[in-house]
Image 1: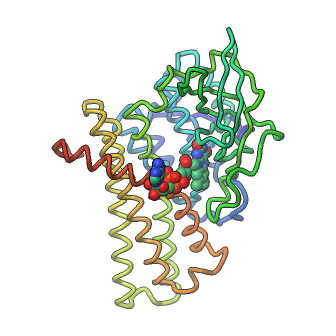
Image 2 (image 1 turned 60 degrees about the vertical axis):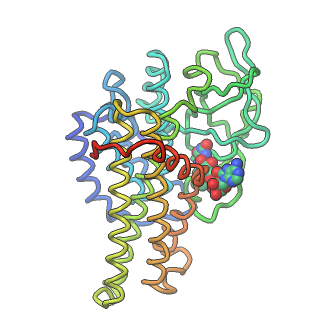
Image 3 (image 1 turned 135 degrees about the vertical axis):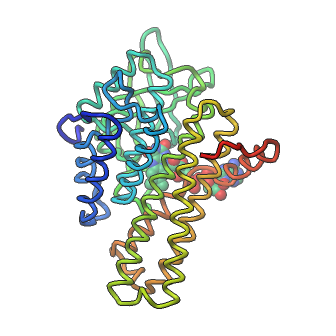
Amino acid sequence: MPVSPALSFQGGISQFCAALRLAEKQWNQVAVDSEEDFPFPELRKFAQIGALSVTLSVANGGLGLHDSRAGMVALADLLRLAGRLNLALGRCLEGHINVVRLVSLYGSAQQRAVLAEYLQHSTLAGIWVTDGTPPVALVQNVNEIRLTGQKGFASAVRVVGVALITARTEQGDTVMVLVPVGEKTRMGPGPGHLTGMSGSGTGSYDFTGVVVPSTNIIGKPGDYLRQPEFSAGAWRGSAVALGGMDHLVHLLLEELRGRDRASNPHQQVRIGEALILRETASMWVRRAAMAACNSHAEAGETVAIVNLARIAVEQAALALIPLVQRGLGVMAFVRGRPVERVMRDLATYLRQPAPDETLTDAAGWFTENEWPEDVT
Ligand SMILES: Cc1cc2nc3c(=O)[nH]c(=O)nc-3n(C[C@H](O)[C@H](O)[C@H](O)COP(=O)(O)OP(=O)(O)OC[C@H]3O[C@@H](n4cnc5c(N)ncnc54)[C@H](O)[C@@H]3O)c2cc1C
């Protein structure tokens, strides 16, 4: 389903950053919509400033944000703003950008052009890799592949027009396949009613019987899991979570000021601690973004830095939530108030795969290797 009239960004990275700063000022006043609803108004706003296509390469009509440090800073700002406005929106935009990234890295020129064509029609893309029961598998004939199985956690399942999915081949390899989606009869409730992030419209999608041309396979077997991208791409999710922290800090300050409690010394301690947590997360996101675009670093180093950043942002956000609860008291627990909703959304959003392994793998790398000196 197209989310808005087709729009791509006219101008360079600095003009896009300026448009983003302007949007940030204008959109701060956006009312918090019903948490069950998909954030269409916010998504349309992002589409209107070209956010769905800016990560395409310049050759495909985008700004190639992944290809330079300035572009990565702009991308971090974009994802942070999305998370600040609405974490469900941030999740869907981050998934969309992940698809663009993977097709840019591993797809052929023709496949990149096909994706660009979808995006020119403002189609939202989804990265659906988490399997349902049974998991997605494919059988390849000469020119086509036949899919079976389900994806179990499919964000924006009713909005996404094209999904990049993983599927198991008969040989036991994992491949990526670009598949047009949107058939209502294939959509299901997914994991059940999550306590947060319900606006992300996360459901399941049954691919059984879907047939697509073999040319829809993106890259080679194993590319999806190839490092450093498999882990390094997580920095974008951390940027969205940082936006959620921005929103919480803003709500904490706003409410304390509104109740004339902000200058109380105990509240000042909490405000100071909240600002430290937010800025710590911000520095880690920037560090991870720079690591992710450092083509001179070893893959293991890039992965380890982004993994540490992911856990650092998770820890900072998890420490912020009880600070807000103590600072605002029971008003932070009134169902449906913005602060209560953002805390639930953020706590849910932070549940990303394998956090223990993420931390210990990074620790293992830096047990054997020195911390890089070119701190950015
Ligand atoms: C709102 C929302 C939207 C989502 N949208 C999508 C989407 O569009 N597409 C998609 O593909 N996925 C999506 N997901 C799924 C997401 O990518 C993760 O798969 C999911 O959030 C994993 O979280 P988890 O906490 O269950 O992870 P787990 O990895 O299961 O971790 C849970 C705990 O178990 C530990 N653990 C992990 N593995 C082991 C092990 N082998 N042995 C012992 N302990 C272990 C972890 O360290 C952690 O402590 C979404 C999830 C959410 C919440």
